[in-house]
Image 1: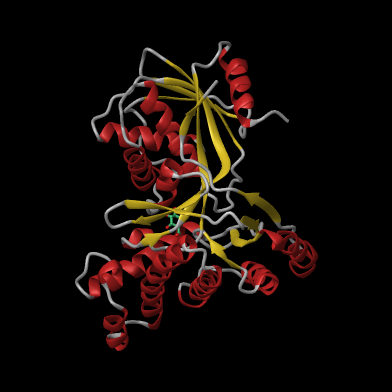
Image 2: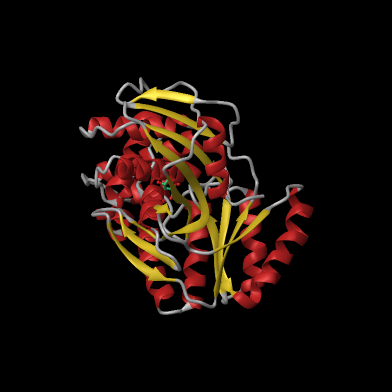
Length: 385
Ligand code: GLA
């Protein structure tokens, strides 16, 4: 099959009967560590991955948008800028684009309309941020086509606002930020309090492996929002803006004032922030055994304190950690309740990890896992035609 850029161009010509002016790409992401910390003003360490959403566009002279996606053949979606309507009851792919344009309208920005053809190879519903890739690819295209001169960070912020206020998902900034700002061969240590970010190089000897459990993710939205409320509740208890400002000793001293669940949620966030900063240093200095320990602790904290893993994911982590020992790290990645596991392992162990998953996962769960051998890639950009 042709590559996604060629497919986007072909879909554009087939749909609109003319050549596209330009192509834009935005990547999905994998988070190495720092889970459910972004909306608590904490630290995250994601990398953009070599799976992309590509959009072929042609500028229009009015303020109408027309979009097609190869994942939903035959559906042409249309809307007029600043007339996106209210949050829809049942979400569809175009709502992520409408959310972005609604956020632009609220910010007083007025782009020209576009005709768009979208293709993507970011796995859908796997926790690899296919929606952020779609929003950021669209935002990058609109920004460039109308010469609005938004920074990649501003595009990420509009994308998050669109999801929060239009799509109705209370997500943090991590996915959109890494899709906009990712750097080849690097992860990004993002401080979600001031949105400062620092590139952390991934050592050459490590393979970045993502294993999709293919567990159908259920309750993601409601459980995600519930976790967020529980974190906010603890911050309020201490009269703080967010858990970023809470020390573990203060939390521990107040253990009897909180429900056991709220205590454990906050403990995860506080300890995960520390682990994330330490993991960035470990990665930068090539201290793989420390990285291994931190990723293992992160997984246990997500499993026992934040309670966002499922048995199939725990099993994947168990079999992979047995193979890699201290020569790599493995943990669940993303929002949770299914989705993927990320492993950063010495190249020489890649085949053994793949073999262990192939030999044991299906046998135990009856589900076929998908394995993606990835590399960290750049954030959103215009492609050469
Ligand atoms: C989802 C959200 C992110 C982040 C992660 C969990 O991917 O979109 O903002 O909260 O879950 O770390």
